[in-house]
Amino acid sequence: MNIRFFALSEMDTALRQRLCQRTAVDLSHLVSLVEPMVQRVRSEGDKAVSELTREYDGADIPPGRFRVHPEAIEAALHALSPELRQALEISIANIKRFHEKQREQGSWQTHVAPGILAGEKVVPIPSAGLYIPRGKGSFPSMMMMAGVPAKVAGVERVVVVTPPDADGAADRATLAAASLIGVDEIYCVGGVQAIAALAFGTETIPKVAKIVGPGSGYVMAAKQLVSPYVDTGLPAGPSEAIILADDAVDPETAATDLLIEAEHGSDSSAFLLTTSATMAQAALQLIPSLASKLPEPRRTFCRHVLENSGGVLLAQDMHEAMDFINEFAPEHLQILTRDPLSVLDHVKCAGEALLGYFTPGTLANYSLGPNAILPTSGFARTWSSLSVRDFTRRMSFAMVDEKAFRDLAPHTAMLAHYEGFPAHAAALTLRLQRLSEDSSSHSE
Image (cartoon, rainbow, N blue to C red; front, side):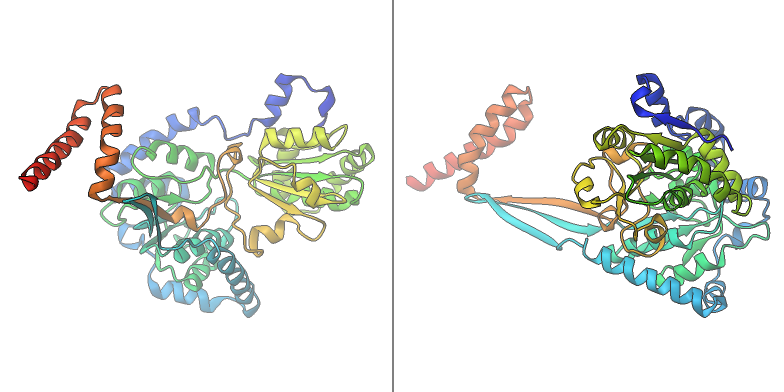
């Protein structure tokens, strides 16, 4: 394994920019491949979904079997081992407790000035489609992370789409997690065709107001294509992580944690960033041995990542390290330093920050409570993790009494005239004129 190694101080601007370039950022090629499939689903509906599922997933599923029967969902729950069911229940409870804290009050109002009442009303969105991937594994964790905040938010219709196996069946643990959360509208459809079906609707799959959930580059390209027609949520693509370590942690721990996100897939990004040259050299020696112990395809995924889109980075000091982190804006940032809380103060751009030796990414991906569906591809500069707020909207309202209108309208009319909107101004001057006329008639 030829693990990439870079010293930040020796990198020029072009190399640094290439290092920050994720494998899935340039979707132009994928968009051209995906667009015909999206259009087929839009025009042909269920027929196209079934044909594309047969072509790309190898599963022959007629439209009448797209939706997973409630009995199959219940059977999946009962088929779990007691230990796996308990693990799901513990994770769901933690995720639910965390997300319940994100619930906003139903509405608020204030007098912004005498006679002017204004406020906001918080309402759940009417429907949400949850894309639960399966291409590189089974992900009941994503079912929990997407489903719990949607249910806590009060979304009336929560829809799940998830790819089938070759026999046309959905992952049993994903179905079980959905059952425990209280989601029962599940379609055994994945990939581009699932995104297009949620966006436009088919004879069997009604369209939704919003689509959330991570996926491959093809799924991301499909989301980009349908984004003019449906809210596609935060940009959640292939996994990425930076492990920040100083000499306070042993190299084996840092190297082991580096493989957490690397084993997700060959399109992931994973860097060990350290201020210790000794740590860097030790990690370079340890990583091949640790990766070789993983089963396939995880071993190959890690090799591809660390040879092409990840590696080991050496910083001169913590200041240089933080500059790179904030430029890269990783999905996951794990801080293995002497004082992780002080380092956190300098983090500006990351999807999440995991602090200290006892907070590896594994716990965050499953069981801690905060959401593990996070912005990728540098979008952590402006986006936040999936939350209850993604499943609600805020509608403002206002009401003005007569006296406040008399005071405010002339000033507002002046602004409308300045911007060249006479109809805007006329709506005010008409009312002012009528108020003046009413006052004159009352004074006679």
